[in-house]
Image 1 (tube, rainbow, N blue to C red):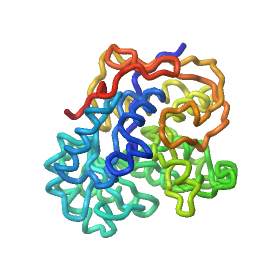
Image 2 (cartoon, rainbow, N blue to C red):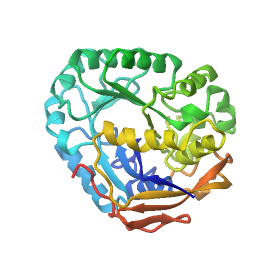
Image 3 (tube, helix red, strand yellow):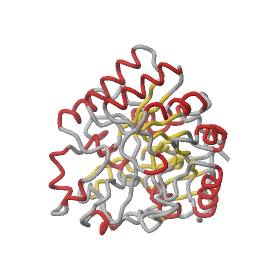
Image 4 (cartoon, rainbow, N blue to C red):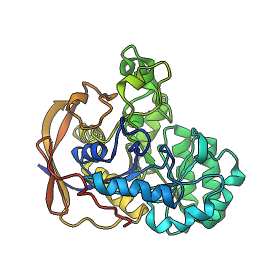
Length: 354
């Protein structure tokens, strides 16, 4: 039996408000506990997006009634809400800036729109950037100009990890995360994931080449966090004529990474560093007393969507054999998950920024 600290996922989409048929704080935090996560940080690109005090209070109220693990909510950076967002910093997980691949109130497609957010958002709270390739390099430039930390979400490319490595070597305050699906899947795997339905391979950032995947593994020392970017959509939506991008990941991340430990690709200390110590430090998260995860190191089993708590009812890792199974999660002294069952009530989770 391996004992781990309660893990932290800094990148989760709950789909509440606006699309709770995909996931809400009840089902999503149940999935988190089943995956060994005791704190999740949730993203603001909901319907409506979380970008002012009213929408932040709305989502935190929903979470207070439904969440089974602890949580914090990001506020989104919009074209004209820099002062409002900055005023909410002590109540939010951080500021999320969408520099690529989004639409509506949170779209920042002009670098002049980034300026007030970098100027006004308090430096002791994190800015997280959805930025890919060249926009990622621009975000790192802004971090250097304003001498403040920036965290790069879900890197996937060789060029990205090498640029971040160079930035760190020059003392720029940049950290980054990588998702398990970008470590364990490449674009060559899309036909297997799709099973005749092309939409199941849709994710942002897209699955990259095998060379990109190899570069991420070779530069794990550059990567600060493993984050799931849990982005659930129902299987009917994924198989539709207009499939939305995104993969579920809360319940598969730790098993996949534990399996990599069994193959000597990672160590348990790597998992603790990138799923607990680093996210706790980067996002200034509090201690969770009497909180831990127990793992059966030698348990071998198949990943199956039918066994999961997420509402989306599918996984790109269907049928994968993994070694290392979560048997028990204790959160603040209470057994929250054991032997496949959620044991804490909705509303047990706490707002760690509360």
